[in-house]
Image (cartoon, rainbow, N blue to C red):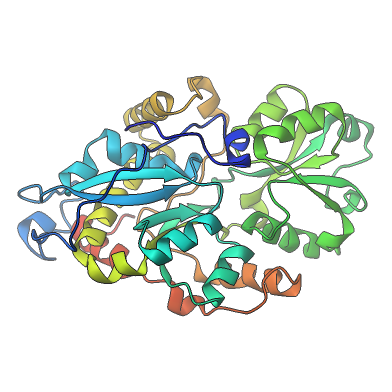
Amino acid sequence: MRRAGAVLGAILIALVGWGSACGPRAAAPAGGSSAATPPASGSPTASAAAPAGAPAQPPPLETVRMGCIAGTSDAGLYIAEEKGYFREWGIRLDCTNFASATEMVAPLGTGQLDVAGGAPSAGLGNALARGITLKIVADKGSTPPGFGYAGLVVRKDLWDSGAVRGPADFRGRRLAINTTAGSSMEASLDRLFREHGLQVADVELVSLPFGDQPGALANGSVDVAFPIEPFVTISAEQGLGVLWERQDTWYPTGQIAVLMYGRNFAESRIEVGRRFMVAYLKAVRDYNDAFRKGDAAKRREVVDILIRNTPLKDAALYDKMGMPGLDPNGRVSVQALKADQEYYLRSGKQQQPIDYDQVVDMSFADWAVQQLGEYR
């Protein structure tokens, strides 16, 4: 996959350990959906008994312009590109990096982007409330049990002294988070704190890119950090902090990132959107074989792909890190999106509620599962 330009703003620092999944933007071919129609459900090439199925003939290549975050949850994109799944289904991926999903909303609304992947947030909700139309079509990062790729890390001297051993001791402390503008991670903190009789307002949130958080623990400028991997493991390995808990332990239904289609793409290029989803979910299933089912050969293959495509070259680190959950059937937790929105509204970071039942569209993932079979 071609290298992208520099990641915008803070995300460059935040995800320096992960690099870029995608290449520089190129002009998309004119026209709507492909003339080639993918195999219908029930046909031999679409049989549910053939989870590695491919179209009888690769459709003509069509460019899909995607906005990316360049985080660990982009693993499905790396795999689909390296193993040829996108090309197999007639997709030429052209990815451009953005600092946040909120920045992708306007390009999605105007048709400059076809697909985007990133975290739901108060900013996304505000944009949708202003009338920008898009569809959330699949999971791209979640926290089922065993997949806690974010965690709360307590500064080591505070842990060793016994001054901070859990949320009850966080009151009045400085806590580093990637953004204080209302993110899914901030909503996750709200859920945890309320279980312990606290509110987010009881701590001092410090906005710091993920990659800066280990250093902030080291120099004492924050007391607790809430990074994603590999910075959770790096903080612990370097003796900068002690991992209290990973996010999957207190929010096992958390929806951290999603895949989104722009309205033009979802309505005018339906067949291309379906083919994109088949290729993506086929790759995500390889990822689940590797990290959920424990297939040793698949794990080596997937780790090798990540090593080739990211600056994180230490294979041993993958054995210590928590990996993001990627749903092999593309399912999105609408319940989690609604619960997080309640926090954004309560905190005043989102002004109007949006109806996630209307925003989430599982038809593309459902079609892909018909081709690949249900992953169990």
